[in-house]
Image (tube, rainbow, N blue to C red; front, side, top):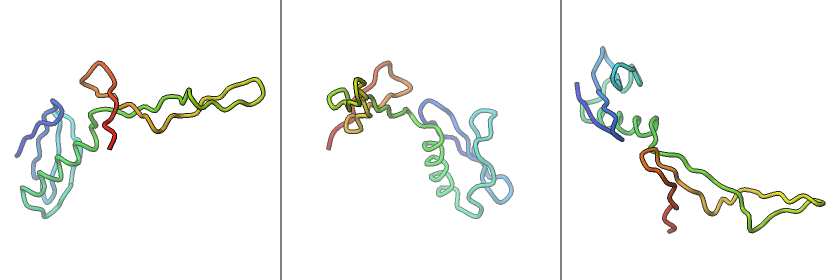
Length: 100
């Protein structure tokens, strides 16, 4: 049995039968995975799967207030996809992603 910590959560990876099982505490995250893989490869794939299932935050796209669309007397504000905010679960405020 191997253990790893990701985003302050403890996971265990254990070989059960021919496959591998990933647990988070008493919860089974996945079972019967990676049949026939070596220990190191199963652990690496388990960490990648945990990072996918349990993300560290979400991306929010707000309104584009600089480019409204006017239809009659009503102004519509579409999404501003060029400036998304990334909200982390373990922080209080949103942060602007780094622009490349």
